[in-house]
Amino acid sequence: MFFGDYHIHTPRCGDAQGSYDEYIEEALRKGLSEIGFSGHCPQYFLPLEERGRESAIPEEELTLYVREVESLQEKYRSSITIRLGLEVDFVPGKEEELQSIVDFYSWDYLLLSVHYLGTWPFDNPQYLSGYRERDINEIYETYYQTLIAGMKTGFFSAVAHFDLPKKFGFRPAGEVKGEIEALQVCREQNLVIELNTAGRRKPVREFYPAAPILAQAQKLSLNVCLGSDAHRPEEVGEDFREALALLCRLGFDHIAGWEKGIAVLHPIS
Image (tube, rainbow, N blue to C red; front, side, top):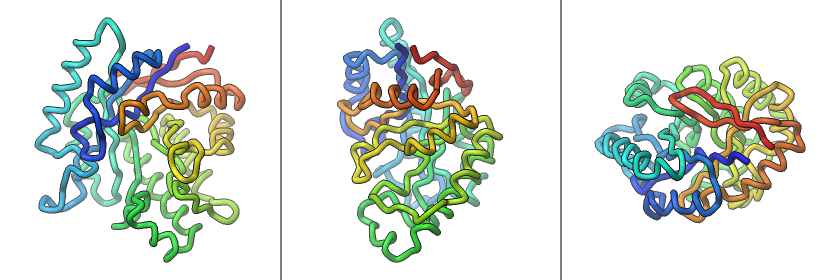
């Protein structure tokens, strides 16, 4: 059975704990075939004086990040395959600034993430009041339209935590048109959807995306990769067997891995 975890954070992100080696050793203990480090990208979308390490790799440390992971690839070459990527916050209107990060290295993959709607960091528990001050359906529509704009840049390999606005349990009333549109754009752009198991650790207590969205993705013949969104070593590969079981029930027969920006499909046995 192939297990690849492509959403693992790094000690260079201020919100992650533990060493690189601890994450890798946990992956080995859990029998993973392949992992990918995907540190939070530099905060290219903020003024220089406002950029920090809280949830990002500082720009001046991006070269160190690359060198560290390349060193680990050699160190563990006979034990596990290690891929090098980034989780990239997409902010509309900042595509030119983002280009330099995309072109910085021949990344194995880039995860598209949306954590901000305007200046509101909607998945940060310190800003929960934003959900009570806005129409929930409008939050979801704005989120999906932002996600779609990111997809259409052509910069990305996969879409991370597809339905992230549900994190704290705030659900839309009825259908969200942007959701289906986003899935269709995924297909048009040949993007992979991440099945992110971190939702199980959040108030919503379910995978990102929810099973009905995954079912629609399967009907559209989209491919799926796995990600734990690990910020601590023990979270690597968490709930992956349940995730694969869900994918099997929904009719998926492959999961995706990565190499130099190209999706590599592995059968679910």
